[in-house]
Length: 286
Image (cartoon, rainbow, N blue to C red):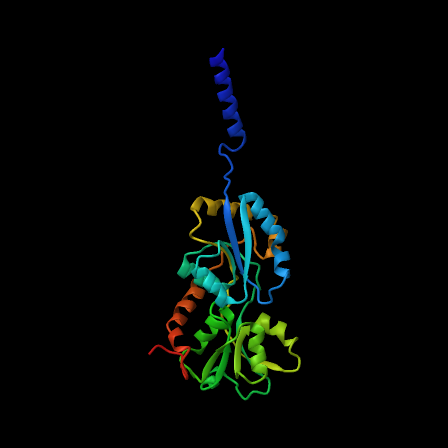
């Protein structure tokens, strides 16, 4: 009788596993730190990620910590320290994370479809073309910014500038151009449209528009997270309701953008980075 009961119990167990997909659902414990860039800071970003963080914590049995960085430079420090488990990375930062720190792309971010890098000047500036910035002071964004740093330096390659000044935010770039601290500044078209309305006391003009579209950013996961856990987190994030996923800025069923050109720009710019702190600034390989 005991043998029959044991056999029956074994068969019931087999049916249970088959009915539940043959494999138990993986459960993970530990911390997951989410990194992102928030120029303004404040409570808004905490509210933006609240539902996503609760969902991810419940599904992965992890303690979720949101860690916004004030700008790209601070974000690179966190990438270098491998401090971020998941990164909601704009394109320039994503290219660095992928090539230097082996982060793995998971999902594309919701982004501006025609993101372009531009140089802006005051409307009354005598500068009419890019080569006239020779010998001038130019304001750039932080290292890690595609539109404010990498693409502009790529376009300035071959010139000698009086100085490059690094602004903490895109709005600061425009403010410095407005007061004459910089002859020209590098931002995106989207940032230009946003901040022009906030700086109405100064009229600006687009000096140059880079012809290449910048790919949208991506959600990245750290290479130091175990591979099976990476795949489970990917699955959990894919199953997050698409409407709520867009609130934190990613697309659950989107394709990873092509970063080949973006990475080539980052690698080219890396060759002239040692010259950026000198005066004058010679933007070519010596």
